[in-house]
Amino acid sequence: MTRTIAAREGAGVVQVEAEVIGNVAAGGYRHLTLVTPGLAELARPGQFVALSVGDGTSSMLLRRSFSIHKVSPAGTYGGTTEIVVAAHGEGTRILTALEPGENVGVIGPLGRGFPLPSQPVPCILVGGGYGSAPLFWLAEQLRERGCAVEIVLGAASADRLFGVVEARRVGDGVTVTTDDGSVGTRGWVSDVVPELIERSGAAVVYGCGPMGMLSSLSAIADEHGIVAQVAVEEAMACGVGICMTCVMPVRDESGTTSMVRSCLDGPVFRGDRVRWEAFDDGYCRVPEDTVGAPKAVR
Amino acid sequence: MSAPTHSVDMSVDIAGVRLPSPMMTASGCAANGRELNRFIDITTLGAFVTKSVKLDPVSGRGTPRMAETPSGMLNSIGLQGPGVSAFVEKDLAWLHSIGARVVVSIAGNTASEFARVARAIVRSRYADAVAAIEVNISCPNVANRGLVFACDPAGAHKVLTLVREEVPRGLPMLAKLSPDVTDIVGIAEVVLKAGAHGLTMINTTLGVAIDTDRLRPHLAAATGGLSGPAIRPMAVRAIWQVAGAMREGRIRTVPIVGVGGVRHGTDALELVAAGATAIQVGTAAFNDPSAPHRVGVELEQLVADRGFGRLADVVGIAHERFTA
Ligand SMILES: Cc1cc2nc3c(=O)[nH]c(=O)nc-3n(C[C@H](O)[C@H](O)[C@H](O)COP(=O)(O)OP(=O)(O)OC[C@H]3O[C@@H](n4cnc5c(N)ncnc54)[C@H](O)[C@@H]3O)c2cc1C
Ligand SMILES: Cc1cc2nc3c(=O)[nH]c(=O)nc-3n(C[C@H](O)[C@H](O)[C@H](O)COP(=O)(O)O)c2cc1C
Ligand code: FES
Image (cartoon, rainbow over all chains, first blue to last red):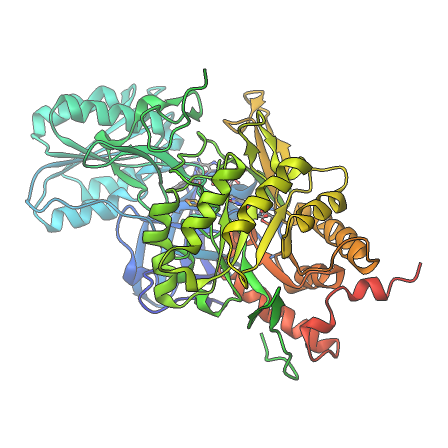
């Protein structure tokens, strides 16, 4: 049974023990539906939820974060939240094995979602692997505002793609790329995006997926003089802003770089604000000009 | 959770400061309040403990800064923070405005830097929100090439002595100790001689995790502090040893604030029975942001179930009941 743990008036976030009511295969992923009263009304595309693994005695203490794929405020079960989960390590293996009727701790909605353009401009939405999960809901909202929406889905192989059918429903055009060429164009999404920007006259590129992909999308957007809005994935311990593990070097409007929490100030950042050059082979160093950076020791 | 069968006096006395509840957040595990206040009303805690604040802004370490370990985690945040002026104007001001009781955790690269941070806090216009100063001597001493103050009796003594000169009468000064020492009673003795009014035990203990795919350290900083239920027996041991020394009259008796691996009421009760007067909840809040509050409710029930009317009557009781 679903139970609300914490939901303070005006906090914009709820903590619930959510009942799982659906867990179905979606290519190489699992698509989970969770009963989350109070969450749907607050959520926007690009925000995420943080799930606990096991009950209060599990040896896995840290929450796992997942983009919100979809919310339904008033289903048969009350509000529901849907997520798409890749079995990556031990925690996600346990979460993808949850059976309908079982419970899971959910906190959300978390973070800042995708900003929507004020004008009806053409947009390109790019998803890598399960990174496409939040984009269809975004596409619907953009189309409601009169934006033309091109969707690009990329993955290593056909089974790592998510939502091709859904993309055809909500997008004006859909391009698929796979590294191995098993479906669509062989190669990376970054191979097809420049031409799409030129052809569609896009003003905004939205991206969600691996860091390398987001970094190249940001570079492509820069080259074309347009804005990239990217949802990043940094290792997070809490998801709610209390641990400081999820930081990244990001410039503010005045050009000052700080280590900001991607769970609170993100996960969506303007691509040109992120210091991509600091990321290298799985580590991210603190750029020397960051506020409070260690002074070089001589 | 049902209401306790009879009411328990959960108030605690921290060196003359009375708190309505023994529950606190742990430094660095609750940011500076706003984020946690979305889940629980932090003014109902005994006190809110801030992230350790230093004189100047600190960016902290590169990432990854975190690795999950069995029943715990390693972190290498590196005391990221805005510096004491911004802390006072933004964070302390806000905590003051909502009426929270605040334990300000302070840190520094040198003993005099600790003292300057303490001065900025106690002389600020929000000083009346401050219930205690917690001196985090578990950070490395820059002047001493990275030796942690809490592992260096002379350094620890100097920090506490200089901070004490800044702290007005009636404001308790807690020294937060590291478990990474051969003799924690010896370090406790040193900081008590320097004037500490209470002890917070324990800080994280140093560890390394290796990424077995890349075969290199998982953390960008290589080493990190281990926390969570995995370290609870170390916390209980440290409290047991130091409280034991107090009971035997080997060192001065002061309140102990217990921290380390508390996730449920029974964990808190363990620390209390070993000698802790108050309890901080750290890593467990990452799993359950309501934990600092929830654990207090569970603890009250457990104390009631065991027939006690006051939490204070359980503090250190394990020493009395141990007859070996
Ligand atoms: C904002 C955000 C949205 C995400 N959306 C999705 C999604 O829609 N679908 C999906 O399958 N995955 C998503 N992820 C990645 C997902 O959180 C990780 O795959 C998952 O946490 C790994 O947990 P594990 O126990 O399997 O792996 P382990 O490696 O055992 O996890 C150990 C710890 O590291 C953290 N961690 C490990 N890898 C990642 C990672 N890539 N990102 C963040 N934290 C990590 C875990 O949360 C955990 O605390 C998202 C991550 C973030 C930050
Ligand atoms: C992410 C993180 C950051 C921390 N930052 C600080 C800090 O700034 N100052 C401090 O004194 N202790 C810090 N600690 C240590 C905790 O306050 C606490 O002593 C330790 O985590 C043990 O308690 P726990 O097992 O309940 O987490 C930090 C711990 C964690 C996990
Ligand atoms: S994940 Fe804890 S602060 Fe962002």
